[in-house]
Amino acid sequence: MFGKSRLGGFLAGASGLFLLLPLVAVIPFSFTAKRFLSMPDGEYSLRHYVAIFDPDTWLASIGTSTLVALLSSVIATALAAAFGIGIWLRRPASGRFLIGLVLLPIIVPPVTSAVALYFLLAQIGLLDTVPGLVLSHVVMIVPFAVIAILGALSRLDRNLELAARNLGASQMQSIIMVILPNIRFGLFAAWFVSLVMSWEESSVTLFVSGVNVITLPKRIWDNLRLDLDPAVAAISVIMILATTLVILLRKSET
Amino acid sequence: MMRAQSTPVRRYAATGSLAMLWALPVILTLAYVLPFAGVTLWSVTRPELGLQNYVRIFTGADFQAIFFRTAWVCLVSTAITIPIAYLLAYYWVMGSGRRSRLVEICIFIPFWISVLVRAFGWVVILRNNGLASDVANAFGLGGLSTGRNVWSVITGMVHFMVPFAVLPMASVMRKIDRRVLLAALGLGCRPLGVFWRIYLPMSLPGVFSALAMTFIFSLGFFVTPMILGGGRVVLTAETVFVQMFQTANWGLGAALGVVLLVAVFAILWLSQRVMRIEQLMSR
Image (cartoon, rainbow over all chains, first blue to last red; front, side):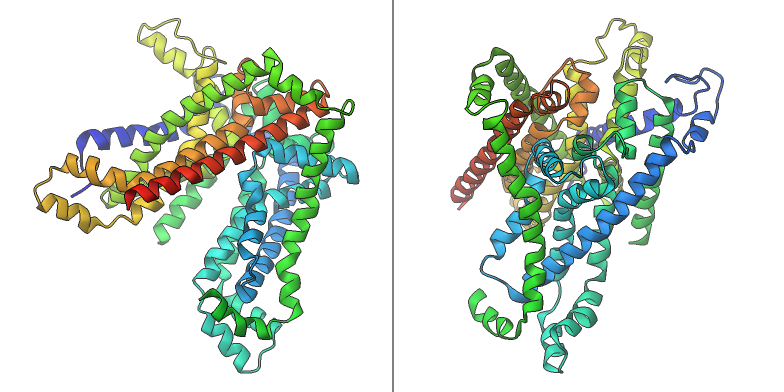
């Protein structure tokens, strides 16, 4: 009945194509045989995919990004879970204020957050170190984890917890044996979102690291700013394929 | 209601849950809110005590040009983003099964992909002798201006923001009762009339949130503009980066960061007022 207009459908299709266009456009450039970024003219090569495995540059950055993303997503999820369950159990009068405080890093312009985190790390001497980067990433991604966990908790039946307590479970037992298992999908979503957000984090990362600690986004950034290395195209294609695969798999599951 | 329920819960709540509740707020206060105070301090003490950084920002012709350009670029990108996102949100929510799924995929693939990769995609298309100019040449439109200019920046920013703008609109559209639309149709309203007179007004709250969100995002964003503008289209957020790391003018960078923050909160406050007025009018 609705959503069947021809013109509307055409325009929506065009908008969808607009969103996919730059992702598709990258693909041919990754197969060029030349050393610089260009369309392959008749000659195809996988050399830029091989370049990704250079242990001194791309592979090192992939390792750094993976390490930072794993650490910061686990820490962010743990903190967000503790916070969410604390809010859910205690329902403090200051709840709205606390949630607002915790979500601040989403609202504040990333560049301002970056300056603040740069200031912090400069004071405590953690600029351009993995712990400093993990701390900055935790601050930036924790709001997304909090949103996912609060969403999961809002669907949780309070009577479950009351029943557990009534049957003699201590508060810790009820948290570990009742609440956490019941919000496991929310926990997983929180962890996964924060993992991706940390893996892709570029604005704060560019401020607080870049000489000793070089994440994948930082290396891509340098390549985009200085010379256009076709390895960026190869990396992009892999990331685009991985994302598409995950989304299509998730779609076919539901 | 809230209070009556919370008393028995609170009675047995141990100190453990108190520590859980406060761990994150305390960490964020120490690692995020306090440093803001430090940044504000920088902005009035570097290079020397005084408000000279703010005076320079608000009176310097160079900064005024940057603010003006930022406002213009953000307004134009928001104005382009909103209709595109509305269209996609509409078909995601109201479209038939296959259409809705296709639209969803188009929204979420870019949503999850790094802004750098997306900006790189536009570099490939828009740079000099890139795909766009090849296509233009093929159609005899040689000399089409591509490369690092303000339209490249706007294209990249629109592409970045559309998936974000879709979400608040779609969540409002999902709550629209379809029976209202069917009733209007049954009473003889033409489908286009149903859209203009019923669907659009009912979905406006989502449009307002998307508007505020897009504008705020575009103000503080510097990765896409820096890559696609290539230093020729300098916006406010990029200036913070340049002041801090290229000219090592930390006080000025900090002051600009503070100004951006204040601007964002002003927009948030304003948009909430607008939404409240809008809600009053609809009753």
